[in-house]
Image (tube, rainbow, N blue to C red; front, side, top):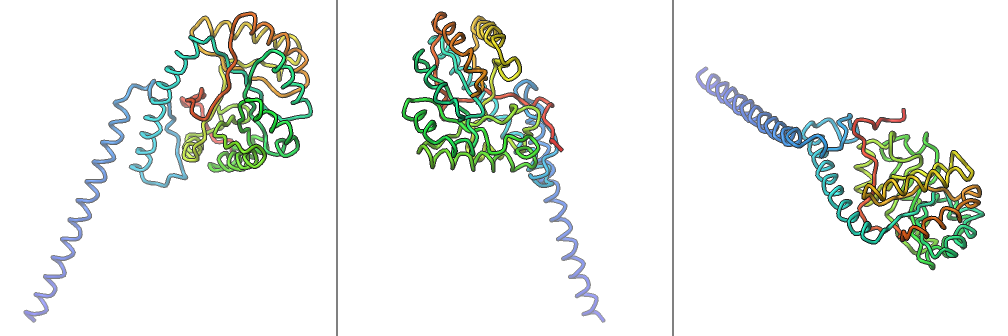
Length: 299
């Protein structure tokens, strides 16, 4: 009987020890989570520039969630500092970045001819299937020193934003296609319709892990909407406005026939103003729209 009581006592003691250990572990995890969240909340809101939306793909751990948000916030602060430094260089050079989406197309060679005539450069954000269809134009871009970027595969919002991994999957496929055709491995991407509002923080995190740089713009030419000479006048005004504000223009244009029709008028103005066109590179910090509570899943 005494032996039975002794054994029972040992079991109860072991259970008590395990319970104490579990309690201590929970307290440590809880404290670490509180510290991580506190470090986030202590940062000025304007430096965070990340949304606190649920990130299902990151698991249920609050600590893991907070660490990822902190990592994203730190990278955003570093990006803004790098953009400001690059802007100082570009302003001294009166630099401007012309970017063309949706190509290559049947008119891409004409577009390159126009740029060549004005001795100007641009960056092309291209769709995978179009690259396959117009390989000679892509090789020409590379040989003449134009910037080569990625614009995905489908250009359909319902597909490229359909899941957390969909954007990185499309851009990875597009990157492989471009590299196979041109030999260039580009990390420059532009999301169809821009990175707001459907590119969530989780999608941005996965793209960052894939070494992609999300480029948006600060001057929308509205050539996709106006489709005539009005887009030129609008773009000229926006370029001047940003230059006067000390911000280097990154101009959104499209590889479309109606854009080409009036492009010489725009390029003539850029040249007359003494602006210098440059191409985007893998090393540059990207101009990117920030979520700031505006990002949400397309579904």
